[in-house]
Image 1: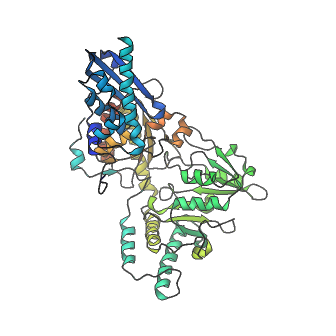
Image 2 (image 1 turned 90 degrees about the horizontal axis):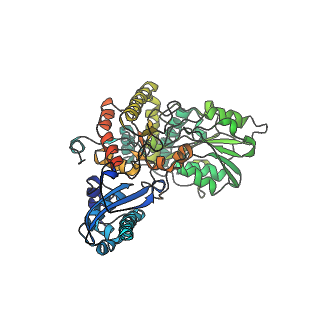
Image 3 (image 1 turned 90 degrees about the vertical axis):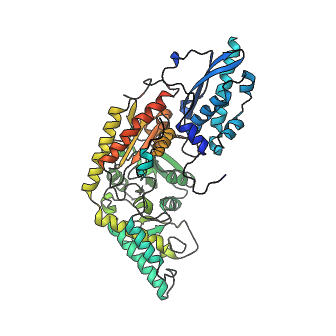
Length: 133
Length: 392
């Protein structure tokens, strides 16, 4: 990876998804009607992610998220929300941490867990939906 | 919130001076001038060596003057970390007490060497209670003069009085004054400390140079062996250019240091604190209102993670520090905020402003033109329900 004269600690894609995040749920989550919610992480550890899914015919028709965490955590959930929207539940589940990190142009080694958390939050929401269904 | 135009048109506002200060023009000029001279190895007897040595001794005299020491009591090192390690090497295999909010260069170097390490508790503002220390138990007590994250000034004089009141004077006192030098007046006689460390780059000098004051007659063991430099107390060819830069920065502090100027910075810092607490919901202050360095303010914002705040501010052209674990390589929250607030969430959500001497009211206005929006956005997208614990 090119590091010479880099003025930002993360890739430009992480920067974009962090500064201008997509699909986040602003404010009161009660106001967003959804079919399933998944939550992982802990504020005490510095990262917590929550995914809200709307599902029709086994396909994610809409997805919102909330995240408490660092730039890579916000960018990971933001990117994952783009990647998962419109996909079947199985296809969304198949989006692994490596794919999220790769989509973002790479994450620093000590931040890779943010992409893992994103994947786990989505998986938790899908599992919750399947339990209900 | 899109990245604002102001970040493109305004010069950057650097408010992470506690991490490292910009090089003072006088230090830069002195070093450039020295680089153009034919300076030899300062240990050599020829003209080039003598010339380098005279620059070093000039810098040593300036450092001694700044902290009210004798030049012979000043050792040049590679920085605060080496100075701190040297003190701990001196007290290898002996019992040592530290404040629990020391810099890692104290914490880790002590843990690696001491026969026993006790961590002295601090209150919610980071202050040690000198009465709670059992002085006679320790060969060395090391308490920083001012904390780097909070700005808290520790009651060093009282600790020194108690320390040196031991009948046989076998408890010595070290202070890491890295953050305090250049911000408050330092007088090693008045403080009555045995060892004092600081670093050039925190006072506008270059990176890679530090100072260790060692009071005449106290125990000493060199950390680096293999040369007779610094009177046998620190082996290695002298960093003449760096020491010249340090000397210029120290001289600037001596000539230009003004309580009045830093008092103005403190007033602006106070204004920033009040505006943050009044204008940003769920904000809280981690720094003390009194007995605090004039330039440091540490605040937390419930629901907004520190690294995210830091990087949003960075995108707006403003550089600050954070106690967030995510910003650190080791993913551990600030041990300082953990020791004072006992709350990882508060630590993860903290940022530190460390203002320069030329801070202006317009700088505070600029911070407050973007910070409330940044925090509101991050709190809005956060999983944390606001108001559950801390905040206003």
